[in-house]
Image (tube, rainbow, N blue to C red; front, side, top):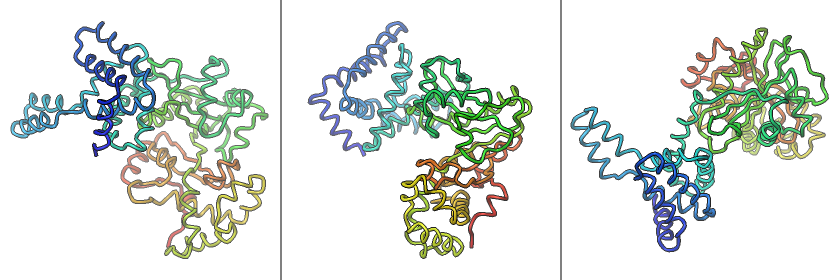
Length: 437
């Protein structure tokens, strides 16, 4: 596992002057005494890191793994002592020696001005490097552990973003929108009109950077399609008359916080805020993409006769014949997609329900990542909407279909517990569509 790290360490010893200086500075940070000196050293250390090129960053993280990990011998001795006598003192000693020194290093670096932002940028780079250097998972685990603590939702501030929000923050909303691209300022202004809401989480250390945001439409019904929802020319409606809040987009602004659960807390917090602001709201739901459906369907269409589930095989054969076994051609012809798919509405909807209600390799209760998010968050899979997103992206990912997940405040905790036990909570309507033997 550590072979590539050892090679990088050898390269570091040979020609990594900048990285050696940084590693030495990290050691000074860990051994420093006095708050003022520690902050000054932390700032200087972060400045050294910012001066590294991408290759040197890779070597630095290899050094964090090789030189700032727990001492196995000390861990073994402490573990044996605790096994022999399970005292509080022995447990404290074991915890102290088992914690990687790089965790304390990161805590001290975080004290420097701009330290939190710098550590986030570090983790972004680690996530990139992990694609080729899986051994850095141990280093990433330490970053993730600390960030989950520092970005605990209890420390975060929820802020409503509206048209009067400073322009530099509105620009970040446009840039980071990940579900339905914002087509300029007019589009954004309509989304933030009186019958729309946008809420974001902010951290005190990053007051000018939203962490994650959710967009909501206030309506008199559950939304069935994206185009009417995002029509920039449509007239706004009186929000006080709305009875339904539709969550149609949630976007992360900080890639470095991957694996830190923020979205579920944000949705639940927004439900509370909206309930207090608009007491007429009784229905809280989503209009959500199904990003994994086409990827799941494509290999099945290539060999429908191999499927032992007869109803499923029949539906696959019908779709394969009509589309000549190719899903890519549907997204390539956005204008003609609706006509081409119309005759396949029934089998495709059934296949989609089957996908959403059945686990994949057995490791997850739900195959689709968006489904896992909402079901784990306590929502119910309520309805599948035909051609709800006829954009190229929507056709490519799910042949235009989208899902409503329903958040019933009184059932959120129960639904979450069911999902944790492996059950998918879904309406009778969706269950009736799934194909079985």
